[in-house]
Amino acid sequence: MKTVIVEDEIFAAQALQGLIDEIDASIEVLAVLQSAEDSIEWFDTHPVPDLVFMDIHLADGSSFAIFDAVNITCPIVFTTAYDEYALKAFEVNSIDYLLKPINRKDLERAINKYKNLMVGFDNNSALINKLMASLKQGERTYKSYFLVSERDKLIPLATADVACIFIDEKMVKAVTFAGRTYYLDQTLDELMLQLSPIDFFRANRQYIIARKAVKNMTVWFGGKLAVNLSVQTPEKIIVSKLKAGEIKRWIAM
Image (tube, rainbow, N blue to C red):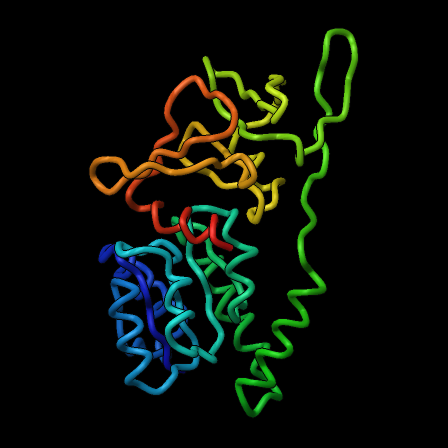
């Protein structure tokens, strides 16, 4: 089997390559690519490998931009530190996604999943058709309501009414488009697993924002972005340079 690693962190790429070699020494890593630009050039000038391991966040933006520029027909295993990208990853030939830091057990599972899917298939198009069919059957469902406290009652809060969720004084608060604030008893990490990544974005460690709430974005120093919402927030919502490209793509989806 021939594979390519797309990963902008050299130590992470080396660790992944080492794990692949431990699991199956017959797997040949053809190239380690560190940016979307390098990846586009490589896939445009080389035969498609059997499998690609691809980090979602690259130094020059989201790896999803690669698929807009070149046609990659082989299966992909995405690597990411953010679980909310799983659904998006599954839209581009993904057979699996690995949460960082990658461990041997999860990597071995992904490789075995690929090998099992390859059995009985003579071409990539047949494999991809099966992959997409199985993924559609297993699509996740996301929360439509939270149960929140209001005085002495529990009331349903529609996720569609939520403009943003943030941490304030170690408490998790949800602010609605109507300007009302409710307390949630889950962490932001847990909430992102329950919210649709199409409608909600983890802007930074403190904020989850709704797409409908984004009024505009301001260019900030160091390549960062400041996101301005249609509701008031206690502080500026700053998106890092690393995630600036991703939020632009999310807004434009």
